Length: 323
Figure 1 (cartoon, rainbow, N blue to C red):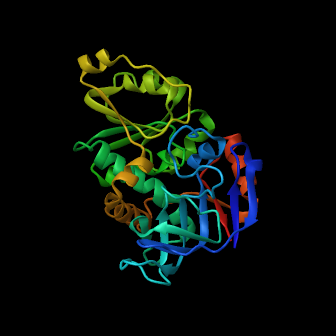
Figure 2: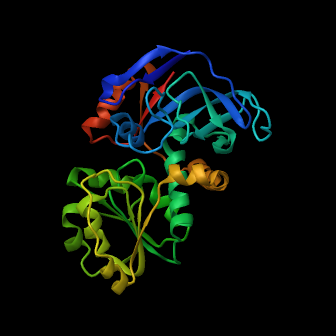
């Protein structure tokens, strides 16, 4: 089968198209004929070696791809929830392998697609929508009629928070963008208001938020902390800005504010049973049309081009490999 193999960390050029044996599922696993594989920021960061010092299974040589859709071709011993021919999407966070014609994934994190759900839309939205559902129910909880602020509103993960937050009872969801040319795009994603991140405090002067969702990090994280209400929580779901930011924990103590980290990959490795109910909520939002993302496709063999686009920044919607 055709697959992408990363033999060393580096730039997009390390994504090599190779022939590999077709994998077979072991106990508790399924084999999937992959039709779509999303190119996510996490794929880019792993490829660059950003997590080289961590004990992750995706270390060279490895095949990237944790967000995939396709059709079940075989099931392993003990798998009863899925059958050959099922249309599915998977969150193969612990194993990767989605940049290939066939992949093996744990059955616990592989979900049937409802009738009428486009697999390209599923692979674009399901993983991040599931992450949003878990972040807002397991890392923090949404108070009744909550005000929610989402940083980096047009990013792939941030973009799915408005409908998920509203399904959980939020009253208003405000987003931030870096430049004025992104405002209309963010408004189209369902944010009630959109402000420029460089003018965050001025634009939202006097307002307080029950939850801040932060996939950005850096100095913007520190700025956003100042907008939390008493007993408000900032949930850090990423760190696109790797420059870091120091926090005065005494200030958190005196103001009754808090920061919670949520790394969905680690969470689902440790708590795989949490995936199915969260994915069901995410799929319901996708099926009803409240989540619909822009998708740009690339052939599998052009995976390096898609990664180069991600490295350049400014990508709107999701990039998806197809074959």
